[in-house]
Amino acid sequence: MYLIFRCDCGRAVYAKEGVKRKKCVCGKNLKVSERRIIAKTEDPQTASEKVQELQEEKYGGAYITTADKI
Image (cartoon, rainbow, N blue to C red; front, side, top):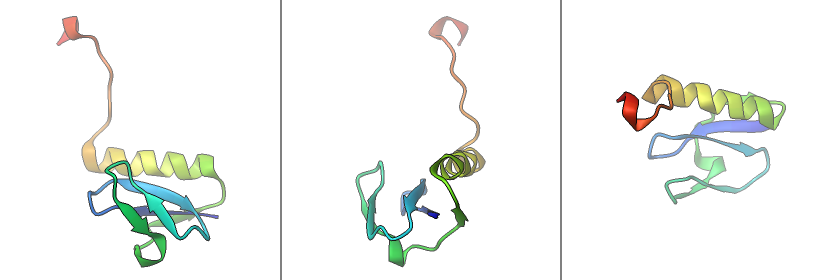
């Protein structure tokens, strides 16, 4: 089981159930037991997809382009 939660910086993060701490990409160490759980999933692939959805909801969809098209 994988738990999905948010860091204080706003980024969605997932961790395997039973893990005590998880480090966010912002550098903060989070105590998983103190976080509000947004969702639970069965496998890491589904957890990753859910995190991507949450990030797109908050920050908008990502797109990649080249400098000459800007």
